Length: 82
Image 1 (spheres, rainbow, N blue to C red):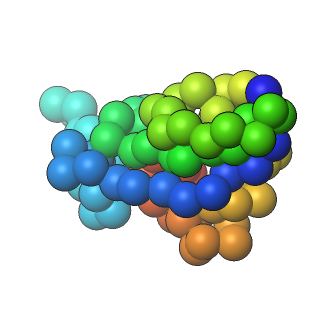
Image 2: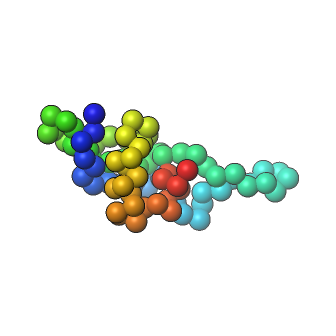
């Protein structure tokens, strides 16, 4: 259980802004749905902290992640926006 999001880091393999769209042969665009390369340091209910892949707290604690991302101006990042 995540009590608090402490900080984040974005790896070199994360999808960057401007590169978040796939284009099909007929020209339709679809957003890449990936959290690859994103890690959050989270504090657990027991007070310990650890680094986890974004996909875990985003799924289990979406409200805490959304509040943190809004505070850090990350809402337009491809891994966060969808």
